[in-house]
Length: 112
Image (cartoon, rainbow, N blue to C red):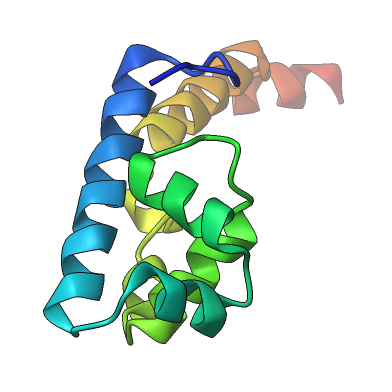
């Protein structure tokens, strides 16, 4: 598969995995690619690109696919604030830096 959006190999692999699961979910329900494209209101070529893991497909098509498959609630777990360990670490680092730069209570009392 070409990589037109120049996404990383890890991101490409993740997208390819989701695309394969999309294909299996469609087949499990006994739907054709034509039917699925009609359900999603996208062209057949667009739907085929989804199943191939093309990064060029709009995220709206993916959201519609999750909805059509009855899995929209699964997307609710994405980017949850409490699950963002990297963001939490960065936020904590910033707070630590701010605390170091803030004067102590004794220093503030001396200034008064």
